[in-house]
Image 1 (spheres, rainbow, N blue to C red):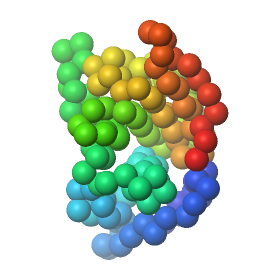
Image 2 (image 1 turned 135 degrees about the vertical axis):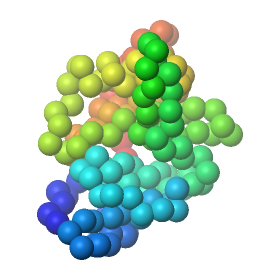
Image 3 (image 1 turned 90 degrees about the vertical axis):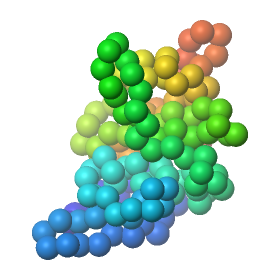
Image 4 (image 1 turned 30 degrees about the vertical axis):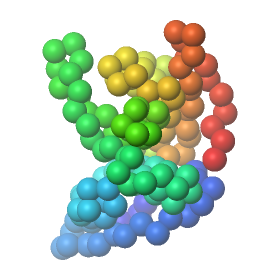
Length: 144
């Protein structure tokens, strides 16, 4: 399986295994092997980034949390918490998906329910970072 090299300063020790014609990646948080999709490839890089580089405890990382939005059930990709308080909402897209105003607005709608201080929208190649301040988002360069 050909996986794109993602735009992270560090390289991470991601465990990948093959079972017949399918590939799986080990999720440190859920302690389980997951089907390796392009979006999961990006999500697991962020998990490793927060755990290894930012030294976040695995228990502070919440993956695929369900939320109710306009009567439909949605799932967020990754939520970073501090003492159970939402801090950073990370929305992951596959590397081939362009990050647009529409994809950011989707993430902002999710965050209207979650209430995190910061949002990261990433396809692994590009990262959009925004901080919620004075009732609006302020965009800035993502610094590792």
